[in-house]
Amino acid sequence: MDILKDRILSEGTALSESVLKVDNFLNHQVDPQLMHEIGREFKERFENKNITKILTLESSGIAPSVMAGLLMDVPVIFARKRQSLTLTDGLLTSEVYSFTKQETNKISVAHKFLQKDDTVLIIDDFLANGKAAEALIDLVDQAGSTIAGIGIVIEKSFQDGGRILREKGYHVESLARIENLAEGKIEFINEEEHSNANV
Ligand code: 5GP
Image (cartoon, rainbow, N blue to C red; front, top):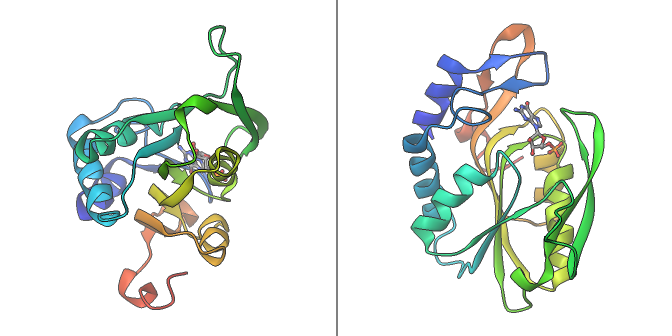
């Protein structure tokens, strides 16, 4: 997705060899116009999957998910990382190790929002080692719902998450795939080279 890649190149900062900061448009300040385009792209890439719900993780997954939900005309559920006072009963929970914060969080959703007949698209802002996506998959599995696929805004392909999820057979669509962040430079994967192998 070229407009996303352009924004990453012009506004993203490689904080280290493995962490990318994009707080101008995704992780702190949010660009609604870009989120709209991202939502449109997810809708196109998961067309004809009969998706009934989008599941994401608070907080940075919410903006792209809401735009996709608006365009796909389906509700968006965000898994909570903190315990809510009003959300106590009927919870599905899982654990996710946060790569950026280096801590384990319990995440939860109310079971009533994910039912057996739901077909769920999981969306997240970043894919690194796949822990967040695996925890969201776990929640969907606990609910007995079907997973339509996993939509990622930025995949760091030099980390293992994308490979692991694809090897497990999930349909993963990443709108920008970063091959390398070394020496402060941001390099994207050559999609043509990878289109057959899809690694
Ligand atoms: P994973 O669970 O795949 O290891 O990491 C994905 C989660 O960690 C995402 O939900 C995202 O919030 C965060 N994350 C991982 N890598 C990065 C990164 O390079 N930049 C930012 N801003 N967040 C990241």
